[in-house]
Length: 267
Image (cartoon, rainbow, N blue to C red):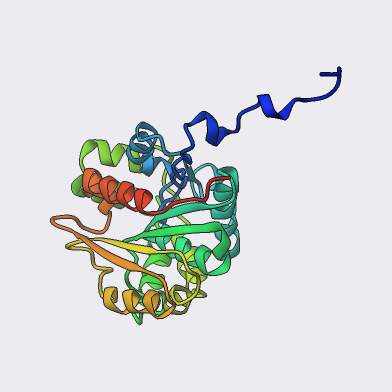
């Protein structure tokens, strides 16, 4: 063989090296999106479990939260934060979110279907057009006007409702105590049912049995299926709104089942 040439016959392909068998499809990476007023640290246990399972994952901070607390929260900026996480993992991922994060995962799926391998939407089974939203907005503005912006009230509820580990995870990145009014104003722009009818990725709805945001579970399942995609509902016994923190083992098992059921094409 002359210098500068390659004898391709002596270079077996990857398929030949593996005995003629194709490599199994890789599991999709996972982007985790936190709820309002908290940060990416709420996902610490899920990140540990995903890493142990060999699944690439990243948790993002949304505008107005965590390390981005000085920024204003906008819907477009929040969806871009999800996209940044997806792009950091190769451009297509399973997106899992809790509460605000679930609504954003649904909106990302509708706006950028090619980037979405699937969605795990937890604690967000009430459309953002709920007639209670104006009352929530007035309450949020009132509490944000307190001298401590509701810090003592927030700490009391966190410590009462969560285990010590869950409370530590939720608060490790700090609380965005002046973000809620902005969030409520911006998410009103999402038409959740219309968004669910758009896109082709499968959707898992995961709700705590005692979550107050469960009211439209069936309508949301129907919306996904009307768009031609598959949908599944998982209700976790004993859990409330913060299902990933109330029942981390059950939630993580469901997340891993979703990962296992979605395949990315082999390059």
